[in-house]
Image 1 (spheres, rainbow, N blue to C red):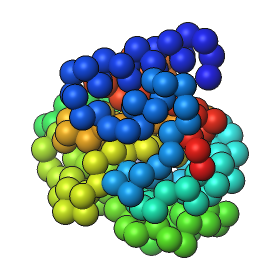
Image 2: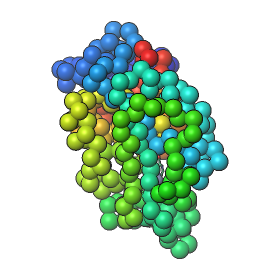
Image 3: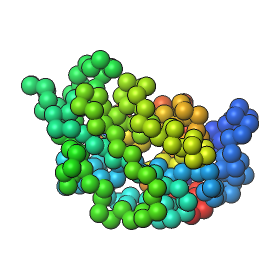
Image 4: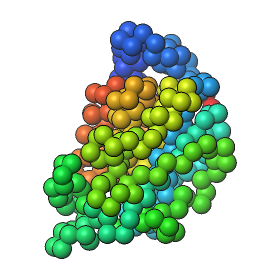
Length: 244
Ligand code: VGL
Ligand code: ZN
């Protein structure tokens, strides 16, 4: 963590203790400069570590494969792990190929707002949509699939792109008594960011483990995502902040 990141994080942690009162032991521990020990009420959310998002896949994120060993190590420190899988239909509304004349990374307007258009990726049942072969988290308790409605995208693990259609993860975490989400995976500026902000929206604490993520960074999207996340009360941490 750089000095300025740490300041930002500490300020965020202290604010959340004051405002939320019960921001939890993790924020308190970090504010005291000690490492964060995952608790029984914490969940590690591993976002979209799939073949499509690593070099060789259909929507490769630079160094996307580099985070896999780190994610495996972090996951061992958590009693509860949930994985997500981007899981699109053929001809999905988020694919540029669905719109004649459109190219990947252009946008289109859909009923729920502006949609970035992507190369065809993570099509249900294809090898490209499989979890990365080196991801070794046998104790993961749930795999949430998202983006499986042909006419709606879902970057977030919690709500689809209309901001209100639930994936079921809020109910699952609440039912299980899990209150704090630690997030890692791909891509920092899309599915990780949207998931972290929706975790906050649903009332969970959210920590993004920056070095266990990689971003797409299309047109300044990575810097914007961090600004939006920090503004939403998401905490930015490094794997070295975790006692795992
Ligand atoms: C993602 C773009 C399109 C992601 C998924 O996992 O971040 N990005 N679909
Ligand atoms: Zn997608």
